[in-house]
Image (cartoon, rainbow, N blue to C red; front, side, top):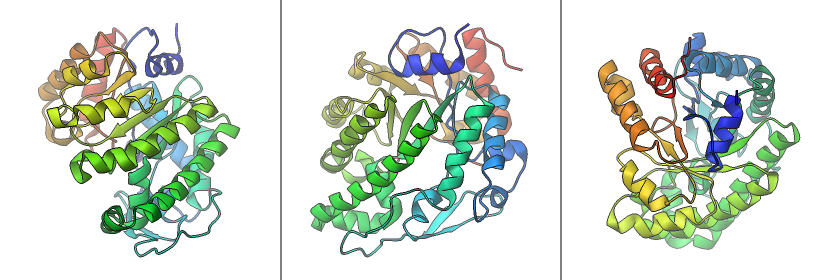
Amino acid sequence: MTLPKETFISCVENKDHEYVPMFLRDLTLGMDVLNVRTTDVFTKDYDHELSAKAVKAFQKFCGQDAVVGCIHSLAFNVEAFGGTVKYPEYGIPTPIVHPYENFTDIPSLSLEPSGKALGALRSYSSVRKMLPDVAVVANIEGPLTKTGTITGIDTLIMYMESEKELLNDMISLCLDHSYSFVEHLDADSSIDCVFLASATDNPDMFGCDIYSEFSLKWVKRMTEKIHKFGYPVIFHPHGMFTTPSTEKIFDETIRTGINGFQFAEDNDPKKIISMISGRCSVLGGTDVVPTLLNGTDEKIRDETLNYLNICNDVNYTFMCSCSLHRATPLNSIRTMSDTVHRYNGRYHE
């Protein structure tokens, strides 16, 4: 029998595979499965053992084929650059001071992982040992998404309009910081794939020209560098790509060399599949909001089956529409994941 890790990677790389793999991209919900406080994981040094246990607990709960190797937070980036993050006892860590809201030149700093990011690396290593048959995916922010966490959105917009050269330099610095993290994961053989989480890389927010000029230029470079490590790349920009005005930039997106494209909410999966035309794999599925957050079991099953049936003729990995966080109802996750397992004829206890 093919291992979950092999099935997931084969699918992402657009190769033959036995069943529809599932990757729910849990970033903090695993803490709910263990019923631990956010502040128990995000200690001063980051409790990598508790993080890894939470990742494993969520994987055992839903039976997914791939996991992010740590309880993830933007704190790994914000604090490394000198910013401040708030840690609610049972909430999601939130940046409260962006380190470079008023930058006028590019800072000089070590790109080596530090602080909680070191704990995250240890968590990835522990998850690899705990779940050897499951794919481990590095969750790395996309170019504008990571830069926006460092500068704040208002500063990001201002520099898009008036200081493009300086902004490109800041993006380059942020991505060098990401590459260093991937290098450490690679040295430890902790991962199988890289996921570019890219909420702010979004044509709906900044327009198609900015998306093309900044996001896609840097996504292409990121993909080329990550491929040199030997890992497939999944790209998850937010925004609509199935309208007449966005078809051109969608084609540009696929031509960056990514291995998989995850569509966000409100996109037409049939149109996405048609436009990709077999050039890379497809990822996506049930909406987190409103379906998983407050939908009935029937609604969750119907929506999940709809995506599975539409995408069954292509190399497709089932995901929910975006990442999963604390307070998403666990019974809704179980309904969704059980539906996927039944569709595959594989039953999870």
